[in-house]
Length: 243
Ligand code: UGA
Ligand code: MN
Image (cartoon, rainbow, N blue to C red; front, side, top):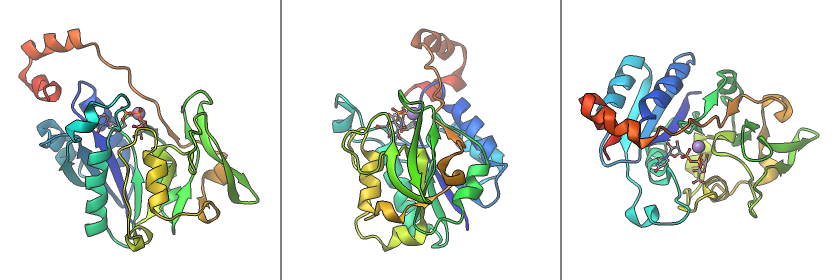
């Protein structure tokens, strides 16, 4: 089965660095289709160039966050663009394929792809460097998920990070009301609930959820002062920083 890797991203100084790092990791993996979904009105030219050079199978989309959500105190990040990618997978994805959301500030061990490839409904595994507990993971008993270990329960049924699960595309297509809500912190839970998923049906990966193969590493933000300087010196940088 092919894996559809969905990466939401947006223009800022770290964008090319993040996508170069992730994209080059993905070139180590067979049967991958990378969907880079920008939170923007248009596709950013240096990213198109990167995608062409990598030699991966890819789709480059742009779908901006509606203005009304940008004004919220807790902004639901990467939803409009993930939704656009989701629609692409629903329309063009192979039923045997697998969908996986991988944010651009994550680091991944390529072994995770072979873990998720046989997913029949929804599979899960731990994610490192999440919140105060430093890991977010399903709790497994006798090979089944019985609860979640996560520093931010927030009343969620599925206390997981975006990079902590994969979905079979045939299963996804069978569900009638699949969506991701514009609610900060509840994107994963809302999406998994919209699949009509039961905790008992979750497939356990990464050695009974004992191994960490993906991390929410995060990249330090570059100060905007340095940015303005670069804008004057180099026109190529400008396109990455102007929204
Ligand atoms: C965390 C989770 O990792 C996200 O999956 C979840 O969507 C988010 O919380 C949330 O609850 O809103 P966090 O690390 O706080 O994300 O946010 P970012 O890493 O800045 O953004 C998540 C993804 O959306 C990234 O891939 C980022 O490139 C993208 N993003 C961010 C946009 O597309 N637009 C933005 O304005 C900001
Ligand atoms: Mn993040």
